[in-house]
Length: 210
Ligand SMILES: O=C(O)c1cccc(C(=O)CC[C@H]2O[C@@H](n3cnc4c(=O)[nH]cnc43)[C@H](O)[C@@H]2O)c1
Picture 1 (tube, helix red, strand yellow):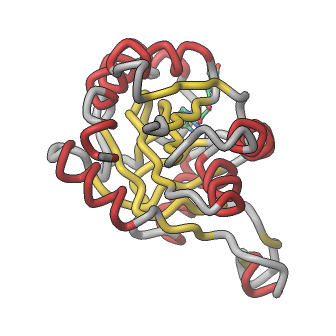
Picture 2: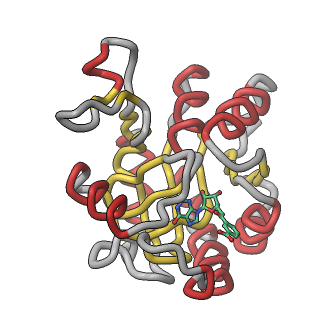
């Protein structure tokens, strides 16, 4: 028996976009909710079935201006919980500096290599996971400075990665860019473009995983 690839999304519209571009015989797309907690809990529940061979966190995301354009496709080299830590007068302290765990999980190198080969147009870089969508220029600038290799932010990747690590399965993050990260401007979101790009990219998932 060949175990399918599990693609975890936040919402049903993202799962539909993945299904539209992939073969249900080898790719299972499941929505588990928005945010890192829902993503971790939902992914762990799905992986407990033992039915899957690898896990991908997929969906739409904000792109850092100048690093990932709206409509573009991004592959996460690392998924980073950017707000996991503590504020201090000297700046943000990641959880590693507090001694309580980790905020960075790297994509599986073999899976990532396959995805990069199958999606040569994709932009590779760190993808941030935040519980709050960035909505000001100040926060966007601070994140861009703290994470010079970050190309995108979303709300689930680190949660999915944590569940995949717990299950001992390969993990990667695939995002298509719906909006620039910065001052909140709902009219600037290009959902249709991002969902179309997600369907297109999903066509390459099984090849990359094989
Ligand atoms: O602000 C709104 O009115 C609004 C309307 C629909 C959806 C949202 C979301 O925040 C969706 C979040 C959802 O999409 C991912 N995502 C997309 N862009 C970003 C972003 O710039 N920063 C963080 N997350 C983003 C995220 O993974 C969620 O699943 C808002």
